[in-house]
Every structure is written in C-alpha cells, then in structure tokens.
Length: 106
Image 1 (tube, rainbow, N blue to C red):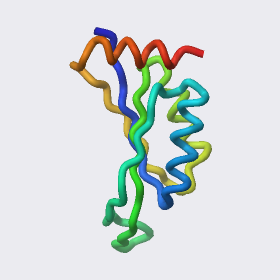
Image 2 (tube, rainbow, N blue to C red):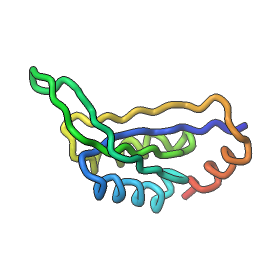
Image 3 (cartoon, rainbow, N blue to C red):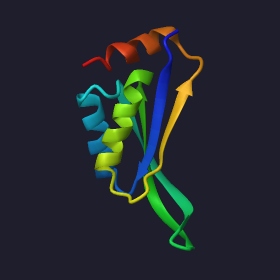
C-alpha cells in the first residue's frame, strides 16, 4: 500500500476552514479535505489559559506532497502559531491510498 498522510489544523471560522480546504484540493496538495464541526479548545496563550471555538480541517495527501501542503496552510493561516500536525497513516484501504496518490499529482 502507498502511504498517505493526514494533515490537521484548526481555525477560528468555518469560512476560513472552507477556503483552506478548497484551495488545497484545487491545488492538488490534498486529494480531499474534511471540515469538522465546532470544537471548543482550551490552551495556553500569552501567559494565560484561553478558550475559543474552532473548526478542524483534515487534509488527506501523499507523503511527497505534505511539505508543500503544510507551507500553503501556514501561509494562509490566520493564527500567529497555527496547529499543523502531520500524521503518516500506516495502514488503510489500498484503493483509497491509490486514489489519494492519483489526485495529488499536479
């Protein structure tokens, strides 16, 4: 099976999440992107604990496209210090992995 990566981030507005998802797929940096519903996040920021509502975005991509996807996310992200996590999927449906690879080729 070809490996795939899941790249995850969170943003402060659904509209921002939708734009990031569409841009990654249109640019073939991700085969698909899923915008998740609201989540309440609690975290340290500027010497205090803060809580905010965020939307998660999960991008499915090929490992050789992950770095470019991370750069695009970073460049368009509204946060000063964005959460951008890259996870390699060790096992999955081979047909899905092939589909991800096919749809992340420029």
